[in-house]
Length: 516
Image (cartoon, rainbow, N blue to C red; front, side):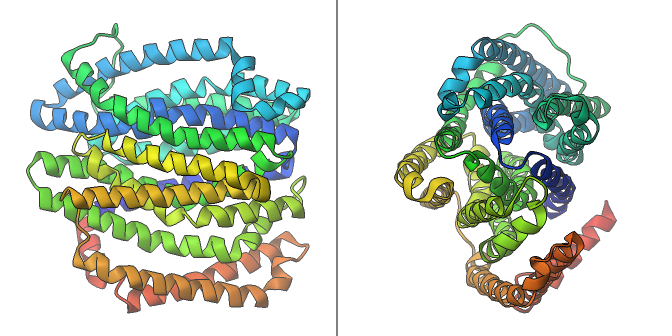
């Protein structure tokens, strides 16, 4: 499991590094003005809906059922099941896409009502979203193919696919933007192209694995009915999660120009550890637990979940500390170029710090929720998500006035801790999870290491202030690199000294790598 997590995390890291390059270019060319706000809404909306039709909800229902079919009935039966689900998914997606495109202006009025007061921004948001929305169709089909490959133990291709998104967006900014009215137009077409490229790549990889799925007329077979029964609560749970994000977009559209962009840039940085760690751990853990539970190895499933939570926190806490203590220099060095000015950097940094408060909870949720999904229980996470959504929306409405977009991020973080706490409590109460001695022993050690790293970053940041605020880009980058290395060195030394990273674990990992 560790080997697969590191494989997925490594490829995700490559994607996120390219994503940073993309965001640096986007910040320099778009800044945080009306065109940027319009594009970020257009980019967000199909990504909101992908959680309903793909990724979280879809995979939580599809992967355990497909894995069980693969183990019990063989590859041919599993392939037939995947083809049945794909045919239904494609039909639903085409109908949904046609309906949304037909009412796009009215759709935008509901989900970004603040844009209605600025006709040009509203017009661009409608146009950009019309171009980007088919991305949802491609990424939904890609998610099904990724679930197939992950269930077969082939994690690399699905983890590498997002690299194509960043490459497409970078290429459109560099090569296509000069031919378009604005960079926002080019980026919108880049999103469309990226969705198609990701789907074609994963279809090719699935075909190489003997899973070249064929389309057929959608049918409600017994397997599909069972899939829909499990999918229903999962989709509702993801829908509640997306309500949180929709509320972010809706409220941010009512705030002054730039709020949507500040949330976007802060979230992009916050997504680095969430993507590299949380998604990698969750992607590998779900089929791992599903296989163990299907084979009657409940203790092994609980052990896997303990190690997943432990690894998630060990790798996430230093990122949270860095964002909280050094948020401003990180944002300034990475994004403060061209149209992205000092005020934009300060606002985005404050938003990033608010997101960082909930970062450990966001990552741990990915491991905890699989304790339910692996047992085909998609209903319990819905009830938990409902409670977290209520807290989130209430706090957003209370904090949007005094704190603007920072208040939205604070509400999101608080709701994440509510979600994680309830999931852990319910799993423990039902006897499905118990924090073992190793995890309980290491939790305070992680906190000590993270606090020491935060103190180091604060001290070193003051010494490097002239570098971090210099006019030259290379001086600022050099200062940021030195700052990061100092923090990581302190955390790594303490992690080894306190036993968070064990030589025996690393030795077993190396031996397993040599044996494959």
